[in-house]
Amino acid sequence: MKSTALIAFASLALLSACATQQPPAESPPQTTSSAPGAASPLAKLKEQLAALESMGLKVDESADALRVTMPGALAFASASSVVQPSAQEALDRIATAMTAVAPSKLTVVGHTDSAGGNRYNQSLSETRAKAVVAYIAGKGVESTRMTAEGRGEEAPVADNATAKGRAANRRVELLLSVQ
Image (cartoon, rainbow, N blue to C red; front, top):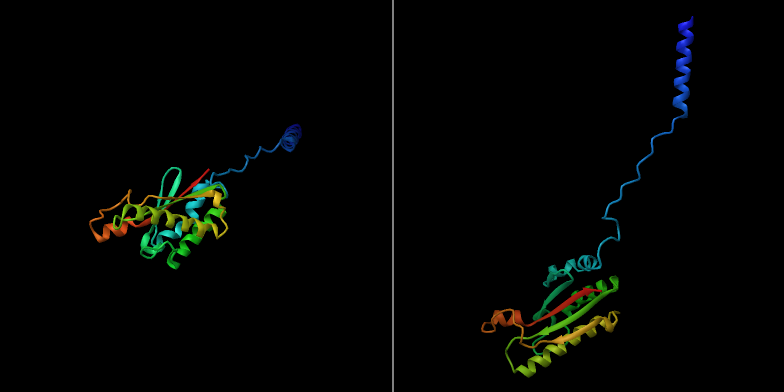
């Protein structure tokens, strides 16, 4: 009887000790760096502009900017600075991206081939860059966030001796950066 009482007392003591023990502390939930909204403004711009390559534009990324190259034939008719309808969808997407990523800035750089006089080409490249800025400003982007430059024929990317090279040199580059 003493052994039964001893077992009962030990069991009671053990149950009492278990009932007063604190449960183990839970670890806080793990967080990841891919939380919504964690992307950099430049990454957000890139995401917004992902469809441009399927429209015939070239998109290059550097550490602090995106360079969108629009072929001249897509953007303008020969010797014209009126934005072609074929370029409007791409420019609309750029305007939308700039609106979505408020700290973004845009520099539009117009380029020509070497056909024609140097003065004429310089003027045409400037007028085309300004036309792109005006188009995007017309979509609601503040003009203070954009600049236009003309480089004329001074920065070729291909040989002006061939038709294919001249076509590559006629282009508009849109440099998008964030502050």
